[in-house]
Image (tube, rainbow, N blue to C red; front, side, top):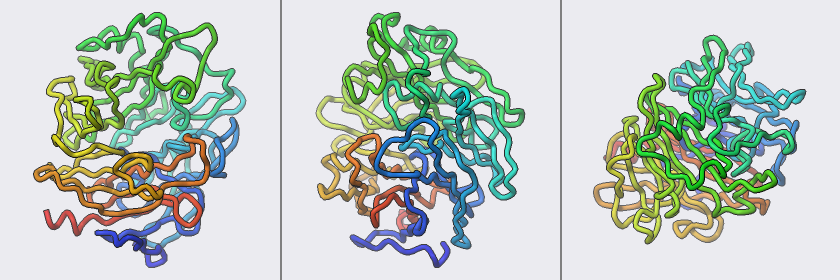
Length: 422
């Protein structure tokens, strides 16, 4: 880390921590399943919000920024209208430092699309499809319909006028998840919502599916790049279209995680609504690309860290008596789990600060690696700050968000002291 990055030392972190956006306010990195650190480890990509006190309106732009971790230099490499407050513009690195993907919106027709940008030269190419997640080698982009994510939960897609959002009633065949070939820029529907529901094993249990509004949401490549996790969400259709169901009728929303390969082979329901309705959140791949971790009230007596095979078998607790929270990820050493927490959860400190927890899976011991503030003044839950701790490709460095010095900032922790002691 360059010497210009100030060390974060409040509450005595267990490992070295740096603020890597000290002179650029309003910055966030993408999500807990995607490292903002480039494949070489030299650069870090973040999104800079133009304001922090309200949601964006359609057509308002923010900045895609790249930080050189060796020189400390931060620069704006692009502007985009394709963002929301939780994920920014869904910035993903490809296979090299010369491939950076992010969303934009054509405001003439409100169609979202992704850019493939070389941040070192400025050369860019427009993709037909949008990006939620990029394959590790940068060859493919996967995304649900970015314009309908706000139907259930604003913050993760792109902002377009509400009246231009499409409405899916029942298992539609003309909307679903889209795969973009970044070598050609061409995009195609990988699987429609109707396909997923018709082929999933075991079946996705939806009551009266023809009377539900059903949409795609999260989509994630496994670390090997050969399988996908696809998230479906649905809620009862009414006479008038609805959006932002988390705000107006949170408990009406149901969920399922579906997995499939890129070859169009078997489709599985890994975690169905009968499990999600117990209470749960934040599923992602294990490093082995064969299992999924998440938080789930599996016994209806409090959140637990759980795991399940990609085909939906062997759903079980990872630890019996350790409280689940935040955005958990498994380390490839097989012995540790890293997670954060929300400010309102019992595992937070109650003063706006939250822990990054390092959990020993053999003993169940939880250690506070970093304690830092994520509470910010805006009361709109869409504008909340989640730490989203994300490992880099070497599984040594963790990037996370916080609210320090009156603005959103991005931090990097060097976990080597803890890893070397394993």
